[in-house]
Image (cartoon, rainbow, N blue to C red; front, side, top):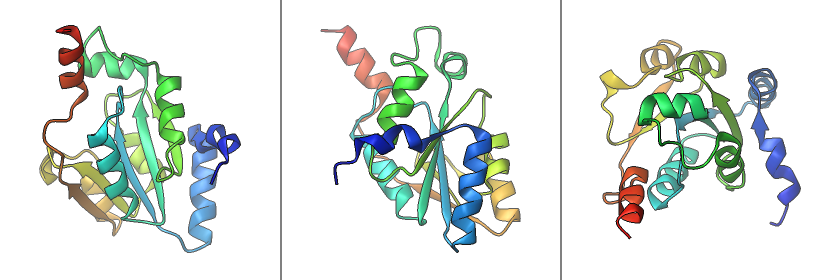
Length: 163
């Protein structure tokens, strides 16, 4: 399926994302949500996104903006800017929508999307997942997927700097 022209159409602002999610819901479809910086995409990200996509009909990925990533990861991050990260994620078959968020957490975005399933990686526990209480209170589920050991952006950056 070669349709590169759809890639930019999978990147939404909040208003257009809300409109799209409403369309999916009218069709009786379910929505999963996950988020992260996705600075340097690696096998661990692909596994996590693939697992998240299996949880619902559509997968929405929230991506930290450059400013948000710097606040979370430090002044040398991100390596790739937010537009590049959003484009790479939008090019993945398992991702249906990408939206940037500038806050330190995706809570406001989760409240907007109201996902049927909130998905995070196995380095989290239920009590520490932002938005978990809200999703469950609305009748949704929270899924913690296992992480693939040995794959992290920080680890990749450390390896590259040692070359």
